[in-house]
Image (cartoon, rainbow, N blue to C red; front, side, top):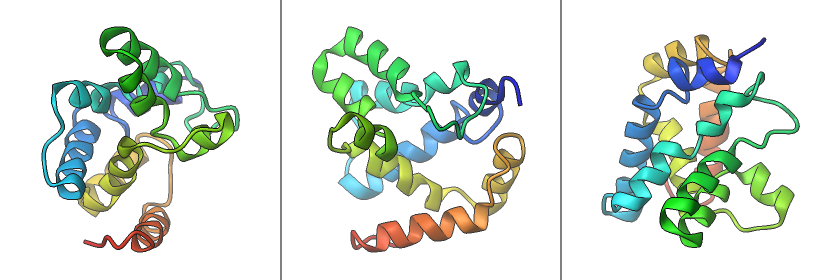
Amino acid sequence: MKLQGLKSVLIGYHNLIYHTLFVTLAWKKIYKKYPNSREFVCILLHDIGYIFQDDVQAKDDRHPELGAKICGKMFGDKYYQLCIGHSRDYASKIGIKITKLCYADKYCSLLIPIRLQYILTKFDTGVDVYRARKVYSEWWNKYGYSL
């Protein structure tokens, strides 16, 4: 579907308001403090690269690059790295470790009320919400986190 990424950022799962809110709440839950202002900008922009992708689940997904470049220009390499490493697949592809933002980004999926998550993904990827939550729950249980 054309413009699926733009739709995801505007009204879907990667919506700038809801996704930012829940990633911020996940950050607080994991790290016991809210992100600083620069980290918050990284949270806001980390998925902005989806706007240029026709398919959010593309095999050649490079969505972390745009947010990382913007944050790197504004705040330096530390914040570039924070953004670029938020995607497990992309970090693995370029040979870097995942970052604190990755953990918050994935954990937020467990904090979003299931009905809201279902609605957001219907506007977006059509992801099976229940299966996705199960996968993220299992991933998080490895790290000792649960709801």
